Length: 217
Image 1 (spheres, rainbow, N blue to C red):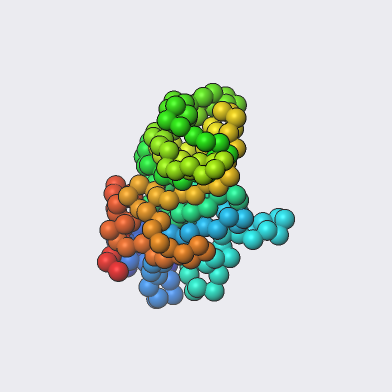
Image 2 (image 1 turned 90 degrees about the vertical axis):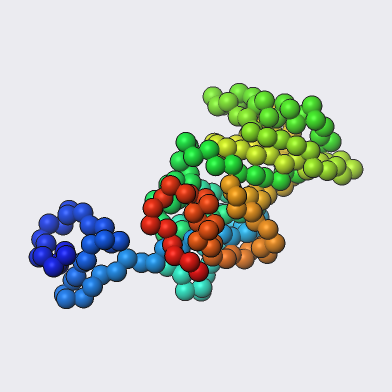
């Protein structure tokens, strides 16, 4: 292997594909193009590449699309729906999922009761559950049905099954849970089970501190 024209035999030598020139057998080695995707995850799929129980996974939605390997950025549990990100850019993914990023994640949640503003305040104030303090950044009542309601819940942190555990601690069952936005990126009218590539502006908007983002598309 040659690094910037010089023979390199140190397997632990660090290199930056954005700046260094790497050759193997006189052939230039190029970094794989960065890919950033958003999927409208259907209910019933697990967020994993393979499942020991043979259940369908989110990767079934990406099959046969000639994509490089991408990994989910965070996760949605099997019963949850909505916006799920994928990428092969680990630095970008780490910036989004870092606890100190405090990137808002917005959910529409159908619950099995007639919610009012007092309940919204209780959810926002939070409660202790299994050693965690679970709370929401913002909560508002969207609409009512005959026996249930839809809430909009915004989190700026993400503990395991955060919303479901928070509502269960208050004696409320979740009927549906749909993530509709991550930071400035909205799910919009993307059809269920479909995905699209993010624009360069969307990529930078989600993780503005990451250098070396994609070029225009």
